[in-house]
Amino acid sequence: MQTDRYSPPAIAMHWLAALLIVGLFALGLYLGGLPLSPSKFKLIAWHKWLGILVLALTALRLGYRFAKGAPPLPAHLQGLMRTAAHAGHSLLYLLMLAIPLTGWLMSSAYGFPVVLFKLWTLPDLVGRNEALGDLLMTVHSWLNWTLAACVVGHLAAAVKHHFVDRDGTLWRMSPHAPRR
Amino acid sequence: MRLLTALTLATLPVLALAQPIDPAKSQIGFTMKQLNVPVDGQFKAFNANIDFNPAKAAAGRADITIQTGSIGLPTRDAESEAKKKEWFNAAQFPTARFVTSSIKPLGGDRYQFNGKLTIKGTTRDVSAPFTAKSAGGLTLVEGVLPISRTAYKIGEGEWADDGTVADQVQIKFKVALRG
Image (spheres, each protein chain N blue to C red):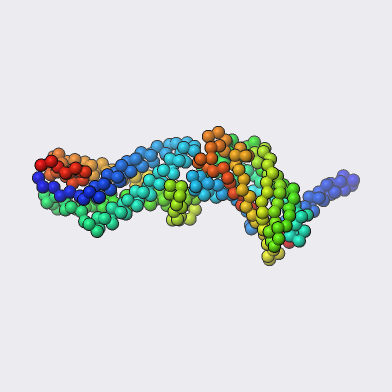
């Protein structure tokens, strides 16, 4: 079956984002239960730095997508399914922007500015307000669980299309082209 | 009567030393760095016994007592951590104290103090420049004193490593003296 594939840069950025997001999700969960210690400070710093990287990467991916476009969805995908696929991808992008942004906002509200890789101080997005920081942390956490659900849906849809519908969906994002 | 006179005499030097301050315009703050992230804090409760006349700077004196438990940091978690044994140990060392030993003019509105700073039972000689500016019936004394937190054992055990929380802490003082 003929499959439209994403371009190599889009594929590379997709898998880099996937790797970062899974890592950051696990790190975030681990941090939640950790008592205060110098290593916790270091892990929080890495969580913030890599989170900002995801924000920048998502912005880059969106820019690339608007400029170069994405391969069309398989022709057999019709009606509600098409809408669902577009809505799902839009939601994923929205969360990949909103989650790092709420993290950054939380950092500002708590009064701990983000100093990227110990080198670049990012501007504070809001003034110091601990109650707002607590609220943002709750929102950050809920957005993450929403993202986890979306990623599970994203994976399930891809796998179902590839193995049940046999439409070669996984080849669209595979680093290697299918063997003929 | 004799007792009263004795008491009056005993309190006189204190009265002579104490120059009223404007608490709303006075602040003892600090900035520390965690992996290069500047974190600001301050001590909300302190008593400042200061006698400083810019015209007679060398005769000036200051004796400031700070309540370590009044530490203010960005979050409540950070505040309760700072009062723990490894940091200020506020239960055993409820106060920190700074006493000047000499003040000298540096020209203009700039001066330099030498003094002793005691935190957590450790006393160290400290020295820093400061400015004193008179305006609106107030003399605003302002300066920055850099200290080594580990010299006072602020941050013991695993926190003594300065790779995460930097050793140098900038104490930023601002005292508004009336008159």
